[in-house]
Length: 544
Image 1 (cartoon, one colour):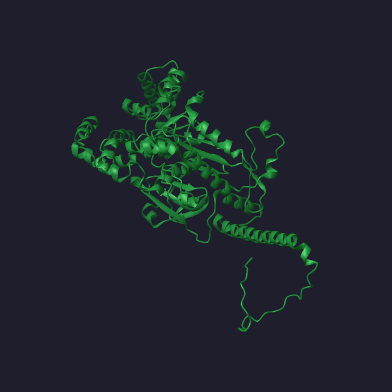
Image 2 (spheres, rainbow, N blue to C red):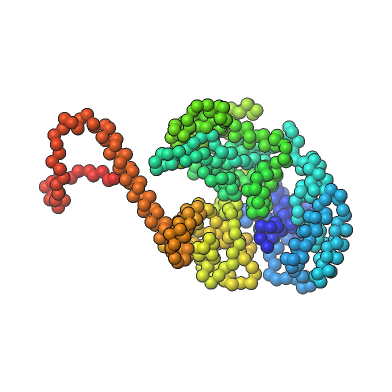
């Protein structure tokens, strides 16, 4: 069973409840302001734990940067008398709940429990208790349950925002994220030929209208796009601004308390939901047929694309607006150039007067920032990795196998061939040279290529190389074939780049000096030079 299939496998329903109660106390504990005694007494009563236990949970949550998994009970073994439900019974429970309970006729849970027990008896399986079935029901999305039993309208009225009330009082209360194809054709950095439109992922803070983060790529929207955009939104911009040669303020930073997204597959994935629960980020989906829900991010996208329409190679917003303009012929910007321009345009937007605020988003953020506590994860790498794509793999004697490549880390030695199941492996499709393996207790270990001859390679480059290797009939392991093909391809690309660059420079010289060459005396040709003769003057040499 996949680890992302149920949030309780990583955070646990009880851990989520504890985290919701204790997070405000953790903020006060870290700030060191005021007395926590009243809050501690309330937490003791609400969680049904001792005062010492509540204090231990608060300190553990603070040390782990607010991660929900810090509150998961760390069991060393199974309690006496407990039993493990087989995967077949689990599937039967889920099937009966979805088929017979999530219906508009709204049957009672007792009726469904009875049917599950009868079905288990017919198969000679041990029947689950009502409490077990209730837990599976509680783990389901409450909105999904209401939608199935009472209709989409009832679910929207209870969980969806009402037009005109989608507001936030403080920065990071609500952050909206969405993707859009940019209205511009970009060129490659090698031959400057058009290669298509990029995708842009944006994150905007509702309370201040400040753009918190962005990500630009040629790849279609995915969990990686969300991870990089969200990581940039949470992290301080101190490292980004010098790269832009800009000193304008961009104060947006910190972990959002909730994010509003649409119903795309990348936002609906179990892994994305699990990562948000892990870091205490509320996840709210846009109700179908409710365009007002994403009004802020939609207006931001429109504003940004309006600026893009002024660039060479723009496609405009429609075919009619584009007219006879040949975007591909006029396109001049590369992805890296557009990325830098887009970041500067965000800085310009953040420091411009916003019509609905009466001030700049930066000024609004600074005015409200005194009422909020910055919440930046201590380990930004762990935050980014938790949102990356993942697979489940067994730790073998020769490491972890992913995409036919073997990875190893010394920390994996104690987990070889263990019977406690597979581990979750996260990877960055842009660079397969390293993966991250999640072990017990939420610990994450970085593993690298076992075969050091393999160069760093993206997932798309790897698949292309392997496809080419199969077409050429190359034999051997994936790693050997990959190393050979990647080195050959990059050597050809480097040679082609040098030749093309030399040709361009030669053409520019001929165009610039074509009139003066006719009047110059014929050259004497190339002669060998004795570089050991110190009497000859030394000249600067241009390297091509």
